[in-house]
Amino acid sequence: MSGPVQEPDRECHDEALAGVEAREGRRTSVGGLDVARVLPTKGRRTVGAWCFVDLMGPADAEQPDPMEVGPHPHIGLSTATWLLEGEALHTDSLGTEQVIRPGQLNLMTAGAGIAHAELAARPPFRGAQMWIAQPEGTRHGAAAFEHHGDLPEVEVGDATLLVFAGAVAGAASPARTDTALVGVDATLHGTRTVLPADAAFEHAVIPLDGRLKVGPEVVEPGWLVLVPAGVGELPVESQDRDARFLLLGGEPLGEEVAMWWNFVARDRDELEAAWRDWRDRTDRFGEVPSALERIEAPTPPWVRSPT
Ligand code: MN
Image (cartoon, rainbow, N blue to C red; front, side, top):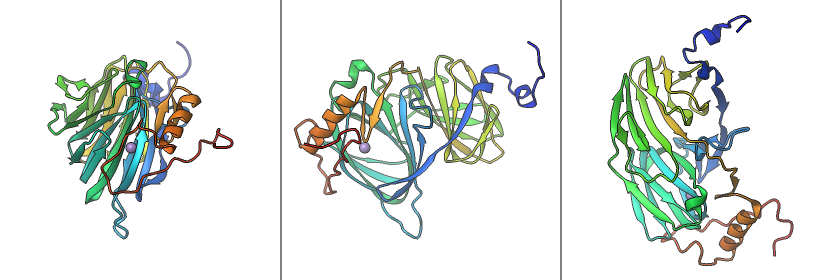
């Protein structure tokens, strides 16, 4: 190798860490709640099978709007709901009614179709709504719902890891996985910790509280750091006390997903069929036990004249 060694490279113990990239999320609003959408991000649709991450709230104290998301459908994905503050009530077309609190996981798998509603039951409300794309083998299958109230915690260096999906450092979540992946809520008590990472996985680090340094990138809440596959040890640094972040990762999906509205599929025909089934109230998605108003789908932009 020739050429000058640049200063940022010298700080990267692992050469693969030079390949990390920071991306700023997009501000939007869902159900009256401020949201930072950090995935999908420009040029990147998936990290492993993780294909959507919204960070929700906290609600503006001047306008304490509860999160109210009326019945709406999904296909081809699992929704993983993770709260930092507050409580929410999940209802779905399987007949589920489940309250979720911080530290618990709601995992709803859509398969060929499911509908659900969510209501923030106790403000202030703050959390992450994540989607996991289903692989070909399960995405046409049955819908399912899991609630996990007791998830494993493990100390790694100066970090406490709450493992809600997959396994890390010997702690395994009981939650269903359709592809190899990991999902962790990490709190960093010291200034630097090296997290064990599966080198076959690509990863995303998503700050929740405090500023973090991952490889050469420094990021704050509202941002995401993409870590390429090939990294077996992931150093994370912070000057902020009790910095907190999500670590999501997984084997690259290896399939191009098509996403529109609340649907994850492989092409527009599948998306359009799901849109029609919701619009026409076929029995594909079922009824949701919720007093909230049903959310109607917009017309897909590629559909010229709805019939
Ligand atoms: Mn939903």
